[in-house]
Amino acid sequence: MISMRFAKGHGTENDFVILPDPEGALDLGADLVARLCDRRAGIGGDGVLRVVRTRALGEPLTGAAASSEAAEWFMDYRNADGSIAEMCGNGVRVFARYLLHAGLAEGRSIDVGTRAGLRSVTIEDNGDITIDMGRPEVFGDGGARLADGSEVRGLRVSVGNPHLACMVDGPVGGLDLTSAPALDPAAFPEGGNVEVVAPLGDGVLDMRVYERGSGETRSCGTGIVAAAVAATRAAGGAPDQGATWRVRVPGGECIVLLDARGARLRGPAVIVAEGQVRLG
Ligand SMILES: N[C@@H](CCC[C@H](N)C(=O)O)C(=O)O
Image 1 (cartoon, rainbow, N blue to C red):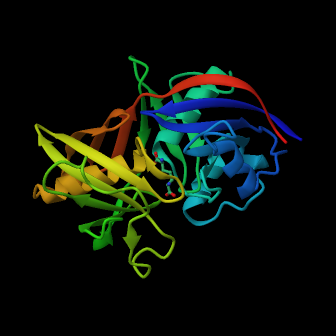
Image 2: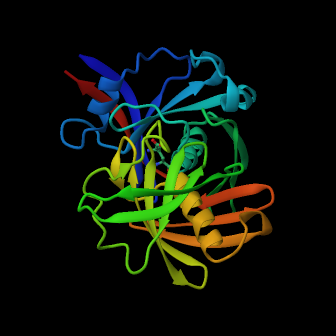
């Protein structure tokens, strides 16, 4: 019998099982993650956020992750299928909300370690949370084949993790995201997340996403940033020169601010449950 404390939270309905593990005592294998995220036999979630002190993480922080050494708390993010991802934008907001809720952090500014590097978080007056997402990297064009065989073209963007953000004509609601879009393995050697994005006018975007390791989710923070970058370029602009987008997703809405410093992502994050989970 496996028994552990958990919390459950979401950011625009991208939902997470939160596992408090300050001293890194949990043995969190892919199978356990998948069982926790199972929506019938487990708690259910798009992923797991393990809340661990950076010094207790138990893995080397090299490359992009090295700046995370400066953060007391590390967001060890796993997708619902148990795979490890570098970064989760909605996850960072929910993680920060949990730190405050659990008394593990205080104040309006919190640093969170991630595998994509340190992310600085600000709590806004209305309770929304803004994350400094760093500078998205653009790698040029790419394509994907959707489940029904149709093709979408888009921009390959790294927001710490890989995305193909595809501007489409017409509503995103009718596109087939029932199974993983096929990506070119040469362009996405680690797989990727695929966004379909339609401009609604007045700086508003409509977006759906198929997430690597989780399936179609109701929101994806890094995907929202990738969509904002693709929309800025599709409109003939340059993200460095400044743009603000409201991005609507099935689970709500986030704001992306782009400028020469990079991208900031703002949106809600809530904790909805706490308890003890037992898996036989
Ligand atoms: N939902 C997240 C992204 C989670 C990771 C992604 N599925 C991947 O494998 O890269 C977000 O809010 O950014």
